Length: 127
Image (cartoon, rainbow, N blue to C red; front, side, top):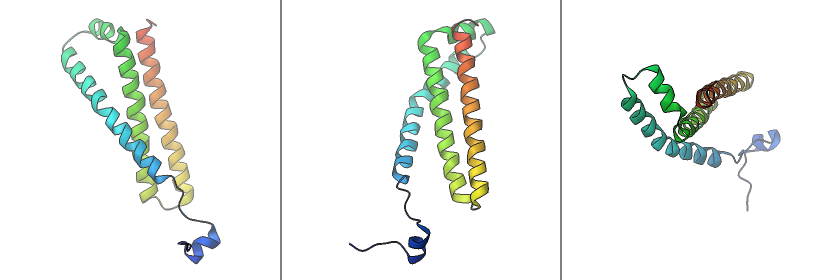
């Protein structure tokens, strides 16, 4: 079997990272998981529209609701990070800028998820 790398790629040791298929699958699976979670969130928000703060808190204190909201936040933020990673990899060509942008995106996504999940848990457990 012949080597498919170009001579320059052989010298630089560059080639397939063998990670593209995994990333593609994870992005599709998170998108698939988002479908029922988004439907749940939309139906819940429409059903609670016009209710006061106490009713919203009571709704969020329900164990199943809290778990589904946490799953929604975690899955949605992870899916968002995967999508942003693809954009950065495709359109940012400077390696330093690419790394810095991905670090910033990762920290922002972790912060968003952590604050959101903490807020849900605080309400759910009556903090």
